[in-house]
Each structure stands twice: as C-alpha cells, then as structure tokens.
Length: 190
Ligand SMILES: [Fe+2]
Ligand SMILES: [Fe+2]
Image (cartoon, rainbow, N blue to C red):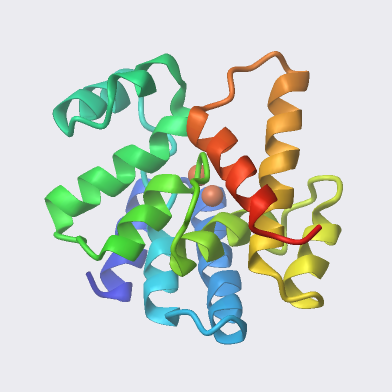
C-alpha cells in the first residue's frame, strides 16, 4: 500500500485526534529509523496504520479474532489489546500488506513481544513517546532513545511501566507483554 492511500484510509476511519496521533507516530518513527538504521518506508506505513481498528466495536474485533484465527486467549482482552492484532490481520487480508516487519509492528504495538524486529521496536516506542504524549516519565524514555540511543532499553522501560501500571489497576497482563519484559530485561543493559 502506498503511503498516500494509507493516510487517506486512516483519515476516513479514525477521528481527527487519533489520525493526528498516527501521523506523529509515523514522523517520530521515521526520525528513529534514520538514527537506528531502520527502514523509514516500512516504519512510516506501520506508524500511519497502527491504530486503524482502535475504535471498532468489541464484537467486531472478536469476530475478526475468530475469523483470522488469532488465538482464543485474545477473547479475554479488550480493544486496548485487540486493535493491534486485528488491524495487522485485516490489512494483510484486505489490503495485501504482508511485509512481515510491518505486520508484526502493527500486531505487537499493543502488547510488545520478545525478539521484536526493528520496525516493530520503533513503532512500539514511537507510539509511547510521540511529541504529544505526556505520560509521567515519558521524557526519560525519550532520552534513552535520542541520547543513549538504546532501542532495547527503551522497549524494556516501556514494558516495565506498562506492566506496573496494569498491576496497579488490577488489570490482566497479556503473556506477550510479560515475555517482552523478560526478554528485554535479559537483553538490555539497565
Ligand atoms: Fe494502539
Ligand atoms: Fe497509537
């Protein structure tokens, strides 16, 4: 899919606030791709499309989980987790976006994953640090990315914060998030 078509699709599908966020993730991701020798085209496309299914009805998301055989375990989670895997599967099926890096970048942006590819790590991080994000501590992650220049450490720190946040809210933590946390704990220097 061409960038222009992706932008149009997202603009038509998402409210302007989320459309603008998607563009900022793509822009932040492109900047990171330059620094970390990533593929700016793949990062841009994944960034634009990553939240495509964010506002879909839960019942539609569940239907896609079953249709695309994404795993029954996903049916215990809400749209916060599901909108990633469903968007990846649907884009592959309906728009023939079958590049593996882009697929996983969109798929995993809601949970993280062990052994992420570079596009996947960049989108996971860019989604957390794009310029309008004001989450407490976000500046620390920006420094790890742009000053320390350490992608794996940024992935670890984001996973850690996400897990702590979910536990504090008595929410279930997806297994992939735990696997991501453990993998990048072992494979990054804190
Ligand atoms: Fe998202
Ligand atoms: Fe997002």
